[in-house]
Length: 358
Image 1 (tube, rainbow, N blue to C red):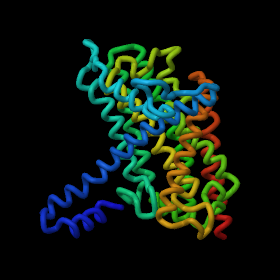
Image 2: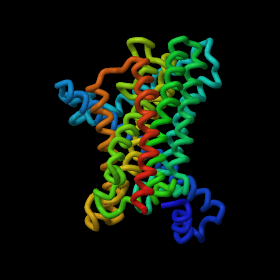
Image 3: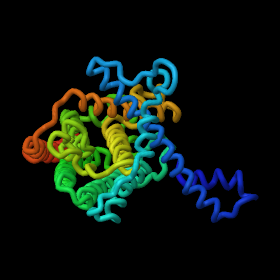
Image 4: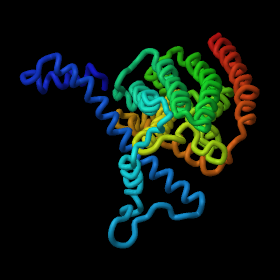
């Protein structure tokens, strides 16, 4: 569902009321409003899921609504809403010694990076805001905005703990982008395309045609990619940039209120983006796991969202079951384990393609 499709639809409906310029502007704005609404609803939903999953793992009940008066609603559904309102109505404090323009700009920069990254995600066979022929390359490039935003947040706070957190985050994200990128190079070699839709089309024909089952090396490639993006999202066990036991709250130490909420929401939006990329690149995207069965456009949206949310569930599960790594362990895993194996996989799959083609 591109801008052209929306423009043609609006032109058929409203051509007698609005001019072509206004219709074009409206066609460009509508996907972004829909996307913002989706991210908001998704944010509340995944926060509720994290509360409930973590409670189950810890043998607790989690948020519940009981008794009379104000409470979190039946089964605690309103707890994320209450938490969101609590943050948005808190006092927004800017430290007197902070670099005010950069301090204000940093949370919006990281959110913009996550927001515009979603426009290249194919939700279905015809549901994509911008079907780019360099979709994977675009998402990798836009994701790098997070590094700039986190360094700005840490440096502009004029707080040593925030600066330590920002520098840790920059080192961590830049390092783990290498094995993640090497894993996607393998996918590009197999599909012979950077387009997200063409990569999904390559995997048509059922579960065993998915890239993760394409050859003996691909399960390892997928595991490396998933762990690498887990580190890029600063999720436990890779949450060293904001480890409470060492750095108070890391790069968000001086943030409060709405700006803190934006950082919080951006983390969950980033989880969605990387999970959707993993589902697209390795798990067939909107393709059905059954050849020529349950493969209609509506089912395509269901399969894409199911795979994405399953990977998000795994991220939540890992957070509440695996302890945090040390900094040296984090870098050792990247530079001495994942990158050498990633390079080997690139050459091994290239040879596999040549041998299979001959």
